[in-house]
Amino acid sequence: MNSVKQLRTIIPRGSRGFHQTLASTARLANSTKNNKTKAPKNIEREFSGKFKILPPIAPKASNIKVKDDHPLWQFFSHKKFLRAPEDLANAGRPWAVSELRRKSFDDLHTLWYVCLKERNILSREDHLLSNYLSDTGSFAYKRLNENLHETMQRIRHVLAERHHAHEAALESFEEQKNQIFGQFKSRYLEADESRDEDLGLQLERFQLAYLGLNSKFPHGVSQKDVNSIKFISELKFTRFKSDTDNMKAFGQPKDIAETFMIFQAHHSDKGVEEAVVSILEYRESAPSEITPEQEQIVLNNIVKTERAKQVSEAEEQS
Image 1: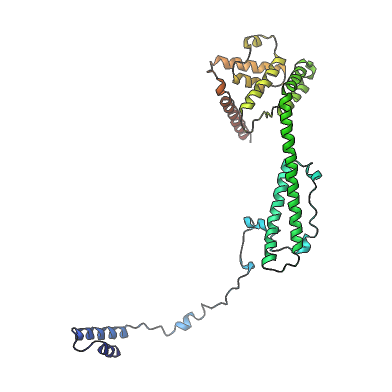
Image 2: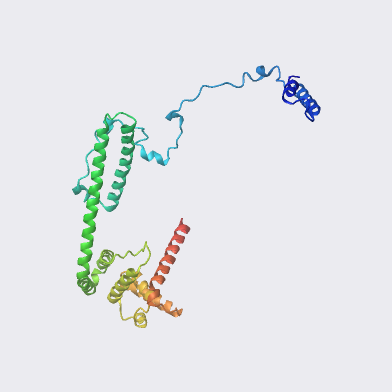
């Protein structure tokens, strides 16, 4: 009824549709009153023991679970939030240039990234000290950071020395290349047969040191490798060629595939003889001509095929 009285004050009596509106409003109010939802009498007794309001959880680092292999742990020393200054007191001194000169490239590469990783950790710790905590003890962090920076600068110095020495050696080698190759060729071909085994080792060292030729070709065959293979193959064939019927029928290598077979032959007269027999069988298959432009492609295909064969054989044995 209160709602009806309110409508009477809002809508004048002479308004059109007043009686219809008043009647509809009264029915709606009565329906709402009758359909009002009532809570069960025993609701408190039913749920009072099941739900409890707990105190809020204070934000703490111990509440956060982080995987042990999370990459951000790389910015923490032994998973410590902050090291005490006394923990850095015995950190050591910078590496001396004389010490670094005795290290290999891989060792210097590893040491560089160890220093870089430690400087990242120190940078985080120094940031905490400078912005959020007191500055007490920050000198120890900055001193260690300076020592690491000095070591990294000395690593760069040693690498620069080696780079300049390498460039100078290459320049000197290009000037004396023909002389060096000529002297080795003379010693290799004129040596006594009793020195075949020793000469094989010398030939391997020569091709690796002066030609940069690795017989396993881990990075594939380059055009420089093609020329080096021809040089080594010629040396080996010249030293071990004989007057046998197979040698006479063979003559000289006709393409890069035949040259590569001699290059891979065992360093002995028997090894070269076996390679020649294989080449003669290869010629019977009437292989297509290999142009100079195709030599590098052909050798890379041969190397890939042999490598796949070795992997397959190793898997079968295992």
